[in-house]
Length: 97
Image 1 (spheres, helix red, strand yellow):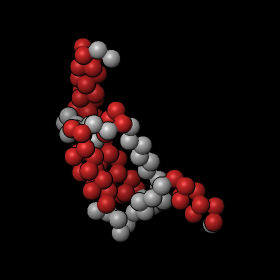
Image 2 (cartoon, one colour):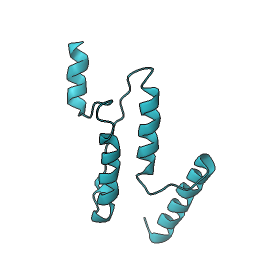
Image 3 (cartoon, rainbow, N blue to C red):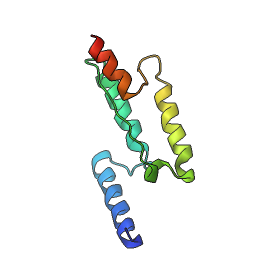
């Protein structure tokens, strides 16, 4: 993607956040916070799984590492109420029930 296309994409995503959230996103990881918070609230009614697949082009850059740590810290603060695990463990748990 060339620079002009990338700028257009960022502008489009920013406009979408503004339209739906009433404010621009607070960084590229901010959707994780909203996703987690909403699912955490909804999980009071039924169990939910939030898959996180961080792609190296998004979070594998040193400049983005601080935000990734911040996102994981946000999830970890709820460790008593959520199960932070990997897909295989979820499958084994489900199969055992």
